[in-house]
Length: 434
Ligand SMILES: NC(=O)c1ccc[n+]([C@@H]2O[C@H](COP(=O)([O-])OP(=O)(O)OC[C@H]3O[C@@H](n4cnc5c(N)ncnc54)[C@H](O)[C@@H]3O)[C@@H](O)[C@H]2O)c1
Ligand SMILES: [Zn+2]
Ligand SMILES: [Zn+2]
Image 1 (cartoon, protein in one colour):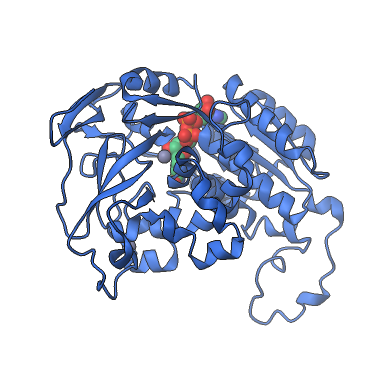
Image 2 (cartoon, helix red, strand yellow):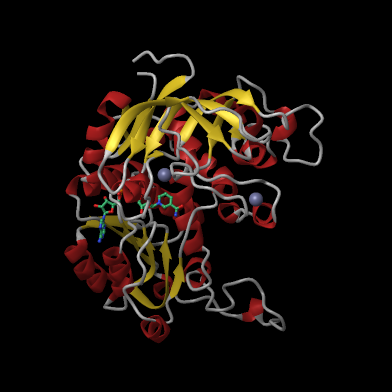
């Protein structure tokens, strides 16, 4: 649909819930010298949009949806110039016409949290797709603190971490649809896997050394090298992944990738009540496991999962449970499935006022509980590495093992939200110009 000058089409949410409208709204303009305006090429629909859509996030004003977008810079604020010294490098190197992807939250690149890698907790953090930060399911989006927030794809190839991967030549060949997965869901899956498998309570199974010798040396620990390795049966690693939406799929792939890389033995139970989502994970697993001698993954619905885990572990349960749903029933399942002295890593977005277990229940099982947003910028190199190596899953659209189901226009936005909400499709991207 042609738009009058200075106007654009955008997918908007109207409270309280389930009300999606495609509207003609003003094209955003530079409001602050650190801003960039991006012409969106593709925007993702994510499980996090569903929390707003279902009214469980408490969004009480209309807003432009979406927090995953890839696009081209069409305007830059006055703080972008060749002599912008002492600021993140993009303030001096980003140009109109550059292709960028954006993490789903704003980060300044200049505060303590940005420096140490917990970029999701930047002091300037804002979530795209909320009333005060209009989202990327639009033809244009304004990115605040753009010099700290976006990735310039030309520059990504030149960063030290990526050069180490020796894959820089292939980055410009990636499809926009594939790049879009770096805005949120692939880093989030990698984050879940990384946190769980590096957890001090999981490291004994990964390193074959008992706790705490499995972790970095503690003061006075000179006996490290004399600690005998654990018997092989003591290092059996059992993991549950709860929720097999697009983020759950990314989590499964990241966990498998880490374990294959380490040559570890493992059993993974991948759980979702939705049969089509279980089938997708089963198909992906059979594709990526065919040349791997170790470990296995089984899919299950919620009830089956309890029986399988009890049988596998002789009722001792899972070392780690990764919760990728974002509701209390999934958290309760995570608690039921976790072993004493185990860890629950949750990346599901939770807005409930209380948890489905008590402090005493956590104490009595020595359960560690990890929560929260993914620091996309910190996880980016690892996510890009997996994205490049698993183009069979992340590169195509609509295939049996493709993570992305389809790319659609804004004309079917309302129907697509309805379908995704009911789990009738997998990852969907919007092309705002179709
Ligand atoms: N922490 C982060 O930074 C981050 C990033 C991206 C997404 N998320 C969150 O991750 C979650 C998943 O995102 P998605 O895009 O895959 O969403 P999705 O809604 O497509 O997938 C959720 C899946 O969980 C399943 N499910 C529902 N209840 C369940 C239960 N009790 N047990 C097992 N499975 C259950 C559903 O059938 C569905 O397949 C959402 O909460 C989203 O907000 C968090
Ligand atoms: Zn998202
Ligand atoms: Zn910051």
